[in-house]
Length: 496
Image (cartoon, rainbow, N blue to C red; front, top):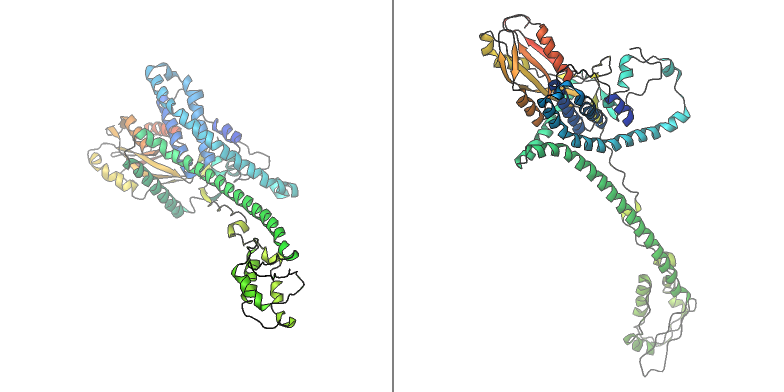
């Protein structure tokens, strides 16, 4: 396919749901392939979608789930095998998963739309300020770049790495993620939960976390709004109190009335008129003071201070200069200081706390792309895989019988990791080996969240090569998963 002459899209930009849905419908449908193989493919799509969902790669999970729905609803009902009783029964069984898949799609869709809209908004200013550079317009994108720009697995805001250049990091991240999933699985199984509910809980927990995050954010916004309302109300109330607090300094202080029997009353005291003390009348007035109207705290403290100095009897009226040190103290409580609001708590003063930055997720680039645009992800094999398999198959090798095993694993960060060697029930001869009771094997893989990533078998009496029968078998695996691998071991020959 010739590369497009259009300006290539950014490799790491989000894709819209329409773009992803259009890609989900692009796959090769062949009704000649037995329905059993297509059902395995559907199960693989479901398992892959679950893995990407747990990874947080919503775009790729959306594509796989959409392809799953398309296969089950548009293509499989027209397959020739559905005319048989077994075919109809198998289709009805797998169709029971459609409501769960639809629920996942429903919840993933707004996440993808939000990411796409946010990206468009961030690009508007950049597109207004400058156009594409001449180099970008004249450069012809490579086939890899053109296909990578439309790969949903690379579309979200992630850091892209090459799996071949960062093998140790890829293995370390996969081990952590696999251990986390296994711990969650063991915790669920300890509670004695049925397998059906266990399967739903593995992804339901993700949406519980997602909705709890949204609820937490909403509650935080409401708390900030409530505090802002309380702060505004406090400022308004403080303004009214400040207006009232000015009155004690503008109006005349009410006279203090002495107890019954005394013919003397204190004169009214204005703000700017110092008064004369009369010693013989001060003590009676302290015993029964008339209740004072409410005043600001500092004004009340000052007035007590003023009375506290009046207990010393004075034979003569003190001179006016002697009162000078006291009078300025009366002027200290000004409207600004006496009515100043208390310092608000730090959370009221500070701006609402910014949400913690989301840790950047790593995604490994596909090793290549097929002509159809299908990505070929990197696949990691344990070093001891071949040695362990040959040890298991040694008895059959001595008798000249072939033996096969199934390579199972997990998708983590857009890479595939073989972590399980499954030996199925099989019928072995000197040049063939056929698996039996495949239903139980697939059921085990589904219960353990394992993907079938390929197969391995021995040639006890022949050299290392792929026979025509092996190629036919491998084609069935690649229908389920394009990255599926086949390993042939010839223990008696070199190279083995």
